[in-house]
Amino acid sequence: MTSALRSEALAPLRENPARAAIFFDIDGTLAPIVEQPGDAVVPERTRQLLITLGRRYGAVACVSGRRAAEARAMVSIGSISYLGSHGAELLRAGSTEAVLDPALHEWAERISEFGREVDTPELRRLRVRLEDKGAILGFHWRGAPDQETARAAIDAIAAKAEGAGLRTHWGRKVLEVRPPIRIDKGAGIRSFLEEEDVDTALYAGDDATDLDAFRMLDELTGEGRLKRAIKVGVRSDEGPEAIVGEADVVVDGPQGVVDLLSLLVAE
Image 1 (cartoon, rainbow, N blue to C red):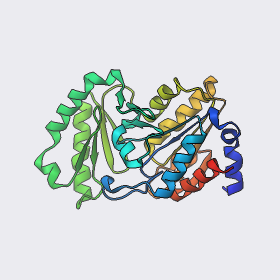
Image 2: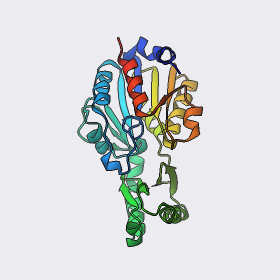
Image 3: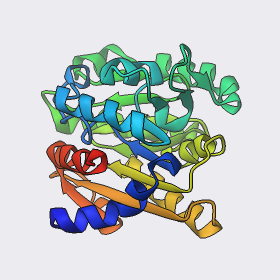
Image 4: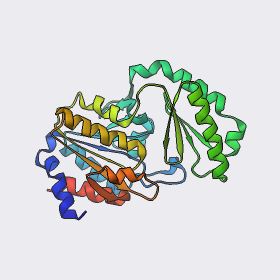
């Protein structure tokens, strides 16, 4: 898609920015994917554009699988909101503490207990990284020396989780173990928008977890809650084909997102 066509697609948001909500995934969208997630960085150019975006549009939020506080620390902008743990946590612009979905409180300890059970010396030897997201556990095998054996160990964890009545969700070289209730970026966005006076929205993402956000925007448009929604697929070598297939606008990697941000803030 040419810059002119992208600009045309974004016109409904730019015409009345005060009534528009803009959502971005972080890893693979705002920040390039790296071997160790802790090394991921949002480029300074991207940060400056986000700051400008936050001043101009009705609502701007980052939606991440990371904890909300970690996402804010990574992006380092306090004037926009963060939906962490795939929408289970909300850290609104200017707030100091994230709010966990009340329905998840009772599950947090059960998920933590499951993590303690499966976090074995063998798993650590395989260099599988366990990420505690409160009511969600992430098992990352990106960077593991023996990826095949690490994946087999994680497959066993997935089977155990499902046998215990928990849910599993797969992303880019990560397994997430979740409570058996709905937790996804789409549900988080719906909840967030209940308190926002907007009628157009955009979501940009690159991974399977972002498809839930795409589908929620379609749902909210179908209900009449939104007049218009724009789904931006961030194309990558590892991303699912559906990200491109279900998108209204497609950009190439985080640099393509910078170009999109520039169009959104252009006078």
